[in-house]
Image 1 (cartoon, rainbow, N blue to C red):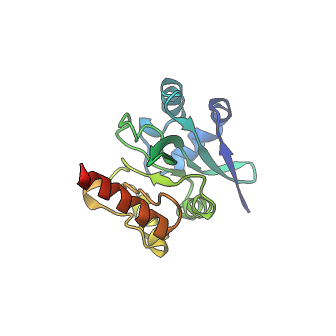
Image 2 (image 1 turned 120 degrees about the vertical axis):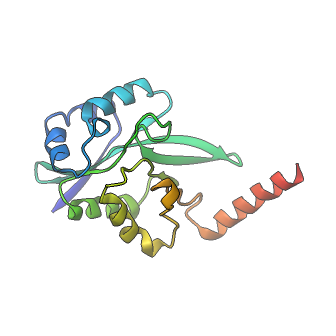
Length: 183
């Protein structure tokens, strides 16, 4: 049975040094931007702008999937909005970003958990390599939510919701658009 753990500190992520390379060797996309060394360096460099929010999936003592995410907060109409994105993708520091996973089943389990009780209002997944199988899994996985998850011109770039409620989202967007028109 897969168990999930969030990691919110650089020290916790550093504890993955032995498991991470093994998981990376099984992942379909393997670039320097998926290495633990790159992530730790990026997190250290941007620790004042982004906080680690890595989601790990474990089968016993084995790391089987990893979402290398970071959180940042902005405000829309004075409402704080928490955005989770791949480390390095929000500020375009990485050319490629992806989930690390042993197999597609592990990735699907990780995504189900990520969506089950999201600690974020906005999930931004960009800079996926064009060859990544993750794209198809995301398309299949998020179809039930009726979101526009796929934009071929921008790979995966997935803003989701502002308030976790369609009506509230529409009200906020209408107010924002109305203010812009009046100026």
